[in-house]
Length: 252
Image 1 (cartoon, helix red, strand yellow):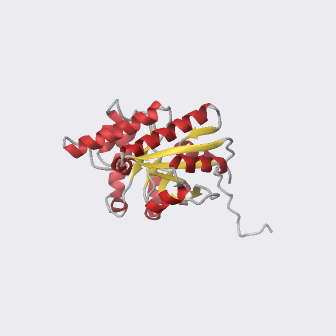
Image 2 (cartoon, one colour; image 1 turned 60 degrees about the vertical axis):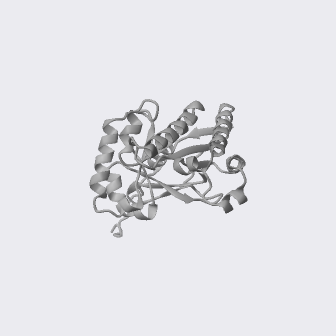
Image 3 (cartoon, one colour; image 1 turned 120 degrees about the vertical axis):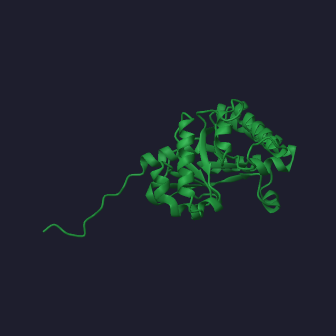
């Protein structure tokens, strides 16, 4: 299945997972980093899927300077949580809490697909239809793939910051890499690791702002269409038609 998309489409997923926000110094620093990152996306009018974890969820949503009630959210599930017998109960409570305090329905989770596939039936039962993976797709491969129980897996095309010095050396600047992807791919998912980005250097945030400015200007010229993982999930879910079951019995 191919989605018709012209011009090329780009979606951003921002992972906010990190230390829980509290009164300590690390909590204040985390909050400031997230605040700056959110303002970068707001300033350039670029929507994003915000992957949130733990007790940060409602705090980030309810604070007016950060996430808003109609922002697109994904619930982060760590490897430890995915293997916990308490996953179902905790996830059910998180989904309920988010939906009671927002204007949107949470339809995405982020984590390791190999582990989350085992919970496909339960995720679908909770209305969670998409898994945001940190796996990278090679050029020319679909970034989305079907999973059991009507779920979809989305793999990133570009990670910010790059995960290794070798990746930085090979691909050059993130902006140059994204421009090349947008010239050849129909759909690109850019994954932003907020904690790793904040721990690198101020120049990394400046480079991200440069990239967002480029995407925003390209969108205004209709050279790029900005979308979200949730919008892509809605399209795929709507077009996924169940094949009719054929009886092994032939008509007499």
